[in-house]
Length: 170
Image (cartoon, rainbow, N blue to C red; front, side):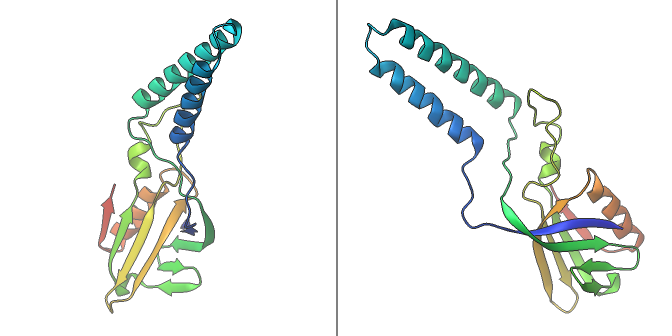
């Protein structure tokens, strides 16, 4: 049995970390130009901080060319994939009732490209979406987060065994 956690994104998402660092660098540059030439130590300190921050941003941009930030939200339940059926929260969905399943799992793209000073920077949920369309036209949709790495591939194995059609948009 493989379980994904379902969640609802909050309406107002925080700014990405990159934007905060850029604002900080602009504030440092502004402070540098506002100091007088008599405040040479402060100007030198601000200039060194600005150069270090720009160097970090350049490094971060060069090594994280496929950048993501987490979508904030609240967990609402779970979906469990078992050999007998899919448990969407408390409701069971038989594989014979399913027309198709769509997975949007962009986290996999960033898995090998996202880097940081402490390696590796791997996550288990970045804008993952799951849509189950039944043969009677009903649709189940939610954002989800895996509980373990590569759990999605284990679900694909179950779906192949049950001959359930699925799409994986990564």
